[in-house]
Length: 448
Image (cartoon, rainbow, N blue to C red; front, side):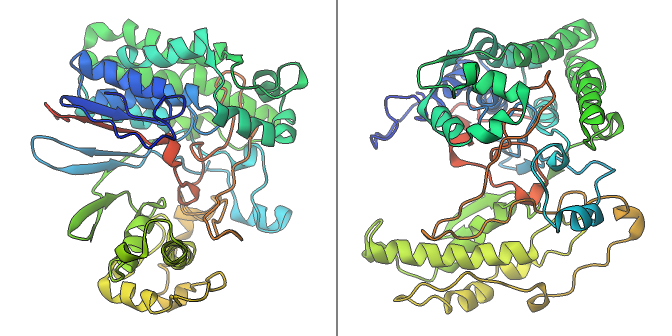
């Protein structure tokens, strides 16, 4: 069974899909189908998730990118262990918070200067190496086909491109793809990304060339092709020629890490999220606040229901802006933020009859941040992954609205848009629900 998403018949119709063997849900039906075919072929959930994730980087390249981000959460069927992979990019060594303050008033401008290390390829390959069963080439084939042969432009892509024509037009490589003939792509247009197909195919070819030394060596060769070989050199050259900061050393030195998840409960259900290097724990905070409110009688999407959820989100987002960051550089008071006592304190601030103004939660309300050692932060933008590029505050409609802007990209990679899935400093990433992937096999959801 294929989970609903962009382009599926079930999208927008409230249809519930069920399956008795395995299921994949993704933001585009073709990505879900790619993952489903992997499961049907005997692959496990990690194999299916990687295939669907790479496919989304092609099918929803206005929102996510093959050279963007890929935070991953895995539950191993045998042991029940849950692990996360911090697949979000880090700042180049040359990045400087002082530069942004001096030259841009503390803001991070559009363009190459907001680019961080591409993380998705490293995260996917790390997941495959530790928990998968298939080769990179087996799983990249779907994305390569969608990129080389093309697919019909779907409404989400057409709408986003039409709203950002001026931004796409700033960069010739983006304009050539998304503004052919000077007009934004329209629903049903045939969308082809040949250079992206060639990039992925090069990684597959490198894997095949080293496959004689075993699966692990092949995966390592595919990774090296991106982070150390011709692809890395092309990315670094583009930044060098256009005033960016990313270098071959930044790419070659990038690594993802496996970490335990953040655990919370809501209504007796255990909830897992990624760490405070992203927005993951925010969900736990919101649920902790709501756990003391009986929202059932309010009725789904009633004015009272929406008001309470919005106010809880505003409080949690204020805490995120004040306290979240890279735990390697920032002391995040996560235990207190997720505690029942703190949730009760925040809950008391919700007026059931009146919307509060936007919240500001000073760090001093928690505890002083750990002093950063100069050698760890010198020449960097305050931390490896804690600096936020786009604070997300409740909008006038009461919903959280992270901004998304296209950015200049190396011509080989076609990281065409900085949408929620693109490479950014970690605390700025708030993955779009449309881009989410869930893969589960009822026979064996994963095996180490």
